Amino acid sequence: MMENNSSTEQTVRLLKRVATLSGIVALILSVMIGINYIQIKRVDPLNTHAIIILQEQLKSSPGDKVLQQELRELDLLARKAFFISRWQIRTGGYILLISLLIVIICIKWIEWIQPKIPPRPKQARDRFWEFRQTNQRWIIYTGIFLVLGSLALAFLTYKEIGKTLQEQTDSKELSGRTPGSADQKNPTGDRLNSDPSNSDQPLDELNSSLTISSDSTSVQQPFPVNSILQDTGKSNAIPPGQSYPSRTEILSNSATFRGPDGDGVVSGKNFPVNWNGITGENILWKAQFRLPGYNSPIVWNDRVFLSGASSTKREVYCFDATTGGFLWLTDVSAVPGTPTTVPTVDRETGMAASTLTTDGQRVYAIFATGDLVALDMDGKLVWAKNLGLPKNHYGHASSLIMYRDLVIVQWDQSQGASVKAFNGETGELVWNTPRDVRVSWSSPLLVNTGKRLELILVADPCVAAYHPATGKELWKIDCIFGEIGASAAYANGMLFATNEYAKTVAIRLGDTPQIPWETTDYMSDIPSPVANDKYLFLVTSYGVIVCYDAKTGKEYWIKELENNTYASPVLVDDRVYLMDKTGVMHIFKADKVFTSVSEPVLGEGSVCTPAFAGGKIYIRGDQNLYCIGK
Image (tube, rainbow, N blue to C red; front, side):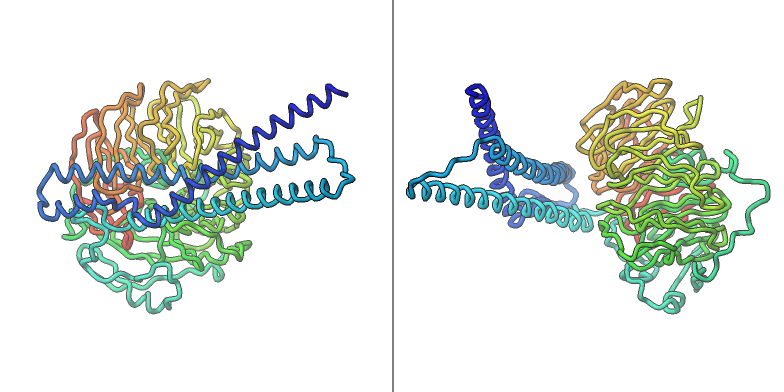
């Protein structure tokens, strides 16, 4: 009996110590979060006093290269600290919540194992225990109130930092901008709709205001609208006996996000390196689209496809790849099973972030509502279905990819994560493989290892490969974590995955995949890397390019751009094309020494990865779709 009492007392002492330490941690974090919130409200972390002084000095001496370099370095440090601050606030909130739970668990555990205090005969004793219990309750209530208030401040601070970041990245970051700055006006005419998310503008007004430019000749052309409710017939343009395109056809087009295989490598050559969207140099045509979207264009033979969406409408667009003529628009807002509740999405994701795909017979699109649709090449609906409301706090953004006649969807949500394949002709679910991963925004790619084709997906905590025909998991390596937005890169037997605040990891594929090297120096949260047999090129969203030795991980060079970058780099022959947010394309040699080829300007901002096909480059700007050729 004495041993049991002694053991209980030891357990109680231990629990009290754990509760006390957790309470102290919670108290310290609460104070720090409160102080941090006050500082964020008082001081703009991206416009420090030092940066403002340098900007003023640069206005007086715009040609001072040393001053420009100091400003770039200081701005880069501020942005790195900015992103780290967001991560610290989020992590601090989690630790604070965990500390509170530990305190509560310890208190309840003590109450459960400690003998109940027997009633005291004397009134003074009764009053003593009554007052003691009351005081304990008030202390606990005060602590809970303090912690919950700090959690609220952590949330508000995180949102405030995100708001400030968006405002800063949407505006000019430095005083000396390039001619392709996103805040320049369109020199050829007014924007189609000053508020792209506003879908209440009458269609007749849009038709009469739409101007499509081809070879410097502007013509008025209406939107031909195909309604999803009016036509549900199958396409009669499918060639009999042909279920999917040949490898030659795939390589000569750009049928998915980041090129033929989704890895950012283009097989064609003779693409232009000089153009100017302001003067019209090498701009073959440009055309407007109605609703906003952050998906990249895809190209199949003589047609270019993209999508747009608002909170009330979802549309797919088709343009003539040669002339820029607007061929059709299909409204796909009324998909059966679409949830009545519109998902809450981040403004940098939107309702149409996923790039489309095509097999040359049909074009496929997916939206943040979970709507998956297939249209024939004339814009007529073939099939449509809703996959469920995505459980995704930024909005669904993974792009589609084709394997033969299968449409593959990376469905990495916070609940029910999986990868799915649908029959392209019928929409029938062919296979569905559950995934034990957290929510992600990366897109799949197909890899030919020499022995087999592998479907590669990246999401916290792993990089995994699947058989594209069956969905069977081939291998998985737990090597990455966090909110992953960048897709993987592949070249010559080496696979590369990266994520900000985690690491960049190289995986040598084979019967037993292995990790030959990894690094934590520079990682990407949005742009996907690209690689060839010698080099890996990685780009951060705050505008830093890094070149690594693909085999060893040796760092060859670092290049800091003046602007943020959301688009992914594309490897074309011996050059890399990288579009920054202001619309400047940075073209440089794929070599161990940085060599700039050119920096042509679009004339408007862009966050979308360009498509390359037939010697032409197709770029989705904030307002227009461009075709660039020699």
